[in-house]
Every structure is written in C-alpha cells, then in structure tokens.
Image (cartoon, rainbow, N blue to C red; front, side):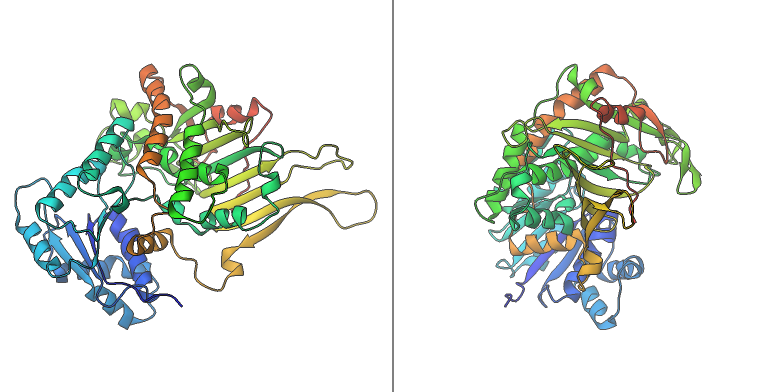
Length: 491
C-alpha cells in the first residue's frame, strides 16, 4: 500500500513561461487528478508578470485547460485553487515580492519546499542567493535546475558552485526530462530484470549502437537563443549522453539512487576523448536550408522569422550534430556509439538502436543482423527485429520481423509524461533520475574539446535541406565502416 502524499509547496520561478505552461502545469494537473498531491500542496508561480492569484489562474485556465483532458471539472477547479502568483524581478532591488513569498511560506517550514528554476542558467545563482537572503531555504528545501547547465565546463562549475553554496548536493535536482520517459525506465528493467540480454550485451555480440533525437520543427522565433546554444549543447551534452550511459553502464549492485548514478559517471569517464584533428573525423555538424518539410515549403535557419537579422553566430551554429563515440572499457571496446540529433528532419523520433553482429556463418541468403529498437517518441515501445521465414512453398525466403511491445497497446493505464514522474521524484526525495554534479561536469569535459575545435576553426556547418535526413557527412560517418543509419519511419 502506497504512503499518502506529503504536503509540499512547489515554487516555480518562471512560472508563466513556456516550459511551465506546456509541461510543468499539465504534469502537475495529472498528478493532482491521480491523487498524488496532498490537499494542502500549493503551486506558487514567480514571474515579472505583475499578476495576482486570480489573473494567474485565469491565464492557466485559458492556456492549459485545452491541452489536458479535463474530464472532471471538480478536479480542475481544485487544481486551480492550488495556484498562486508572486511578482518578482530577480535583477531588481524591490523586496516586496520576496516579502510576500516569505509571508506565504511562513509557518510551513516543515513542509517539503521545492524551488523549480524554469529560467535561464545565469539566473540560478542569483535566485538561490535571494532565497537565502530572504530566509526561505530550510532543511526540507530542494531546488530543481533545468538544462542547459552552462555553456561549457567552466560555466557549469560556476553554476554548481553558486547553487552549492546555498544548497547541499542532496538538495539539488538537475533535471533531464528524457530520463523520465517510460522507455528509458524500461531500458533499465529490460537489462537488469531479464537474464537473456546480459550474455550478449557486449562487444562480442553487438556491432554498434545508434542514438537519435530527430525533430521536424525548426527554430522560428528562437534563433536568438539557438545562436548561442546549438545542437551539441542543447541535445548531445545532456539527453544523448544520458541515454548512452544507460545503454553502456555496468549492472549496479542494487537499485539504489547513488549506485545507478555511480555507474553512469564511470561511463562518461570512460568515453574516449575526441581532440584535435579527430574532431573533423569523428564529428559532423550541419545547418538546415530551405526545403520541403511536412508537405510544405519551409525556410532555412538563417531565414526563419525571428524579428532580428542573422548574426555571425547564426552562420556558425549547428542545427544538426552527429558523433562517433567510443567507451574504452572491457565490455565495449571496439563498439562505436553513433549519436545524432537535428532539426527539420523528415520525421520526429527519439530512439536507441542496438544492432547485433551478423551470424558467424549464414546458411540462408538474405539474412540481416538482429536489432533491438527502443523508441522514446512519438510512440513509446520496444521492438526486437529477428529473421523469420516468409510463408510459402519453394525456396526459403527470409524477412526481418519485429517482436514488439507497445506501451499504449499493452497497458491499459495512461502512459504518464516524463515531467510527471520526475516532479513526483523530487517531491518524494528520489534523485536517481537526476544528474549529480560530477556527472554533469564529466559530460562537459568530454564535449568541451569538440566545441573548442569547432569554434577555433570557424568552418561553417554543412548545409542540408529541411526535410532531409541530415548532411552528407553524417552518412559518411557511418559509411566509412560499411554501416548506415537506421531510418525506419515511426508509425
């Protein structure tokens, strides 16, 4: 029998922003609908919006209600009743907002107090200092940091130092929403709760691994942000490296919050550095140009509507990145891990493809290697592709067929969004799916030399048409060893 939910105050800085409206508040509504929030739990948004509680509730009712299945108006009204708003300017000297927040929280020091920073990383340190100055940090407080955590190793360390000066490491939750997806959870279960995979989960049987995060959208209205982020910082340093860790990590000694994170750090530390001239050989970066996507003509990155003209940084930033990585340990020696992410791709898909080696001696023509495909989006599920005989008389004809697990078809319960799982983990104090400081810094330590080479040479990214599968260099990255990207269109 599960324990009743504990009372909490969840304070969201940037509470009227895009992340809050699209992800956090819908996730919290579902948690409320499923009975996972105590009756006393409050959600307090902080922003510069100048809203009062009624204004904020009206805004949420207008923007969020249409995005969630409100089948019980009583639950929706109860959820709206949890919402409050405090106006504050993090860069100003006005203390009225902080005083109002302190008054709201006074007398509830024993509650779990979660500060969710849905804001740019440069605000993390100043916000935490203002919290401390206002006397709002208690032993029961936790702080959630959204990615990206810095732009490089130096800035990540600086943010970690600033936040770490106010909060203990056990109180800091660095979030990566990919780790809350059901397929990621099932990857751990598939590997460590079943006996059949472990004997073949190594370089003796696996030829290579592909990890892809493809998006059909471009960057309209976001070029100002993306000029200073790029695909490597925005996706590879966090999402794709986290997935690589879960595929490659050793079995932990126990299902323990630190044991799992310890094994992930070991993988990041075992990544073979890509430095100097190897960057050109083992990495590819691209930028989309005008093309046909989703049945319509779309502009290139430099021509996306943004309200400002492209800058020098706009010409250099990558909207596509591919990397050939290697894990230098006994289990994975010689097995390449191919990481790929891009915008304006032909379809939206996030998946892990584990391709096994060919059979040692094939007696059937037309056989193909087995593949294990774990799809994170758009339809979460797992498929094992095996060779089977096509029905019919005469010669044996082989065909690869999938043995599939679709979460939507197999389980009658609703598949929760990633943020639901992660928010509940924060409220219950479970940091397993969140990144530890040494984990974040190890990832940046591997990424930094690649960024440095790209920026030092100033070579523009390779163009690729919107709606295509990326620049030619990405296909050459695998083609040099006789491999190809897995390109099955998601259903």
